[in-house]
Image 1 (cartoon, rainbow, N blue to C red):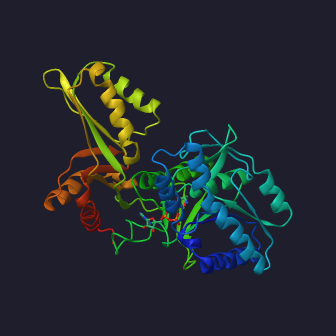
Image 2 (cartoon, rainbow, N blue to C red):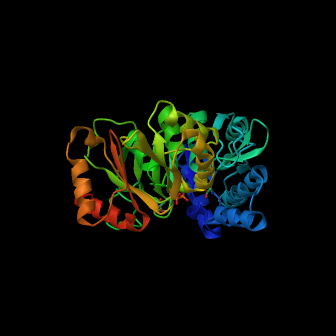
Image 3 (cartoon, rainbow, N blue to C red):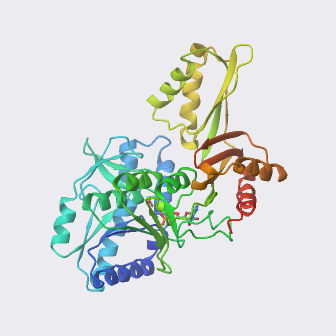
Length: 400
Ligand code: ADP
Ligand code: ASP
Ligand code: MG
């Protein structure tokens, strides 16, 4: 099995020893185990802040060299602690573990997991401890996989090694019906399908990184999200089966990491949207929601949401295209947040959307954008309203 320990789980020396003890116990139970670790506590945030203090435009290559360092500290520390529990272990960087990625720094994608040295260590009876969040690019530079990327390292290794399960140890006891820090009455979900987990991760439930869930679904790796503080069974994320309750609404999520851009007064003719979104894609900007209104007098407004981190680039792209598109203006707004309802049962239950809008309306919360999939409804609202929206919806759909 693969076990991944997040930042809080390895936050200090005591925590690292507690994790070592659990790994030792897992071994005694007869399991072969590969461990993936995150940086200790807030180390990654601290490194990112340092980079910003030294330079306003740090080189992407050096940035990844720097921020990947946090995980490289945890891995050898855990190996030392394991030795004290009588377990022979060896630490590996992402590069040593053979995690080959694309070249886009700070958001690299895994192309291949070679894992030879991991297999060798296992064959020698050792516990390999891999530094998460990082790999080596096809240009031989160290890359990182995006925030929360250790989840993806763990799932990719589990897939490559044919592990029977990938355990994700974190600071909550599983995946909940809403972020338990915002909704204290949120309920732990014993089982979640990949499809629902994808939507939860994509809409702000940061307990699992979205790419790790995509990877798990593609390679059919069962995930077990659980607590490294209580060690109790948590949430199984796996393929949908008949034993799963098809709740109409399973979870309410929120995400305040996106901003909105509006290009107004664009001529309503073929090719305009294509030109705009191709230009954004060429700058590697991941656009999320898109709304285009019916045109009046031959022009229309196009609004879209995107990660706040990409806002400056997106505005530059849109301004650059304004004359070519014949648009009348470009505006941006970083005071938005998105609240979403996720549920596989939504497909067959009309009325969920209406109840959602009624709940928000009764709370005086204005809806600025709406988007839906078969198992999700999302509304963009003011950022300051979003936590209130999550709590109201959680209780309106009786998810306690
Ligand atoms: P780690 O460092 O272990 O990777 P993260 O901080 O990335 O931990 O993810 C765990 C956090 O995700 C929890 O502390 C919780 O506040 C947050 N979270 C958001 N939505 C959910 C949810 N639906 N269920 C569980 N946790 C959630
Ligand atoms: N340490 C990295 C981060 O904070 C990766 C991770 O924790 O998964 O984003
Ligand atoms: Mg995480």
